[in-house]
Image (cartoon, rainbow, N blue to C red; front, side, top):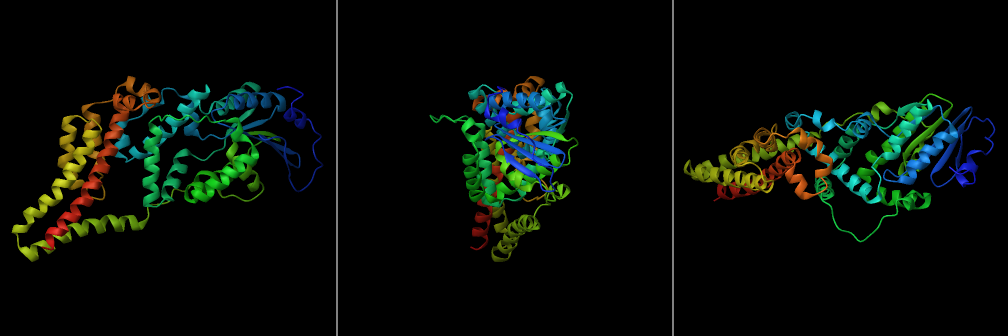
Length: 412
């Protein structure tokens, strides 16, 4: 970093006088200093796909010689940046059994979008965070991972959404998997400017308040509290630029990080809806029996079995599943749609994983293969996940069709 740069000059300003109130000083568009008694915390706002951010972080660590470097990472995200073999350790059968298919696809979709953007800009997503950790270790500084677990953040975000917002988010997630063509170029460095960031965050909070709270606001609190609790009198914090303004506002305020780590239980109304749907289907059969006698039950059974079986099988075919998996989809959907404990994607996904077991090569190629639709289908690991998701959607569409058909027959 040049000694003539505005940021470098600001770093060497005389510290403010000791006071009981912290002194917060914006030193540049990317750097903020907090002086609190004998402690100084510098917060540098970065872009996760910016070569300039990588260089700035390295220069600041050399310039400031901090005792502690805090990075906007949790343990899972840190391992994702440093452990190239993590996919090989993942058990696809366990993922499906534990109902984590959608969660894993969300992670893959976010990673695919960031890697695509990073490839355009010539830098690996999160490179500045990894560079901060490595430079800190090389300088003998302590490294602190100060972000909330990505698993908790995604689950709290998902729990905050209603049905339609969840549907929109799933659509956006699927769209993020597939590269689109755009003539627009994104100026990443421009996005780190305070004025532009402030306006963007306000618009985001206004447009998607349910997502903004767990994804941004709660993490602003968590990050600032974790940084304030980190050891050392000279601390450098490396975080995404979009967090800086919110974080600074929470400095010195009490934050209950344990409460922010709690994963909300499923809404009791969801269980009421699931059981209510099943009761409605069974009630239709009872009404049909009393209205038309036992002869109507066969027609009503067809009205339930055909749309659920065909819907699930058709969507499974879209995923290019093995023919036997398509058969499993058709046979299991009429039953799984009447069982709130098992989604259609579970037996279907397990069948596909068993018939086309992902190889080590598939696991190693995930990051590259998810950059294209052809790659997603070619890779057995991602195709199993896709088949499991599509079969669940197909069964749900079939169930809604089926309940309407069954009730129409019951009322005749």
